[in-house]
Image (cartoon, rainbow, N blue to C red; front, top):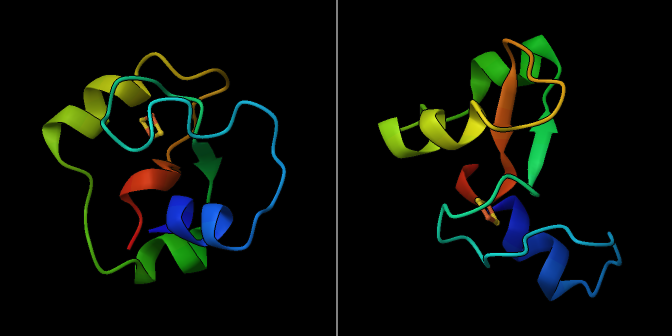
Length: 69
Ligand code: FES
């Protein structure tokens, strides 16, 4: 997942991925450009959509980084 990439490369995004991918936060919220959003292999599950509803500045191409494969 995108969260794995950030962790494995020791990238420092303060607070990103607070729940470590358990769909219990929205700190991994990312806004994906439309072209890339359309090419993502997996669609958001109901649990991701519920958590996205709590995300700041939600857009129609928002995803949770811990769920993007
Ligand atoms: Fe918490 Fe993605 S890291 S929902």
